[in-house]
Length: 360
Image (cartoon, rainbow, N blue to C red):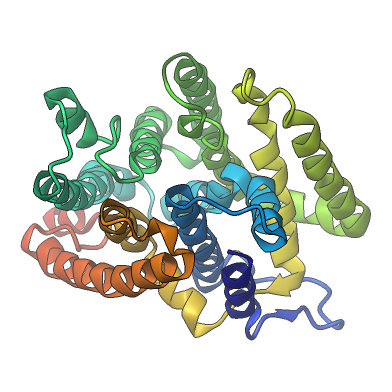
């Protein structure tokens, strides 16, 4: 596994570069092209994380080093997806206003659910072919991500919850002068959601969810946050990174019994990540490609992994990862191509508020 980590890191750092000394900080680190590349970084890391779940690591030093790296990242590898989602929702509302909210249920919530359910259908077909037993409750629950049929369901469930909460909260406070109240209501709802998930679901359903709220608040106060951070950048960066590592080490002893204590760590990791992107640019065609195909790669990567596990290929680590990767790429590409044809047919590709604007 360590060999693949090294290969992945070479891809991630290809063409990466620090900010020029004359600039001190990148001003466009939150631009869509930059955030897409960062998403590409983490979807590559998630691919290895998911692969490892099907494999049995050896006691060799390389595999043990990989295990430490994977443990160090933990669930934090998805924090950027949630943060950029929250930030993007708020920025879209800022640019497009109330028509964005009026179109939101169809153009964001229904569209995401439809795309997800099409992927779920592929998993259901595979489970049927491989004779993997499923209950009626599991099948029904899988359509909203409450249950998994072999896919990474929890992530989409959280995203759908975040979308519904965003719509409700900002519909209640639609005027720009009220958006801070909407953000506060969203945060309160997020805390309630996390508390409920602590009672009813595994930790992955809740331990990174507050990152969405963090993205919304960052959009509200970005200039002030940047001034504060950039005035004391290095000590703040090192201090937060040390807190993340130290907190992770201390938490390892009690994590199994108190999983909710993990919640602050992804927020620390995310803060460090955003600060790093202010001074270091990760951007190349590979990262852009994977960031652009994030949804399909994330949702579909377990299809070939499930087949390979069924046929016992998990004993061959290199072969398992290579085949999974080689199958996921074209599978995700074809899936996205199909969605690009489906969305126009259902009028899901229109700009936000297009229908309302035309009516006016």
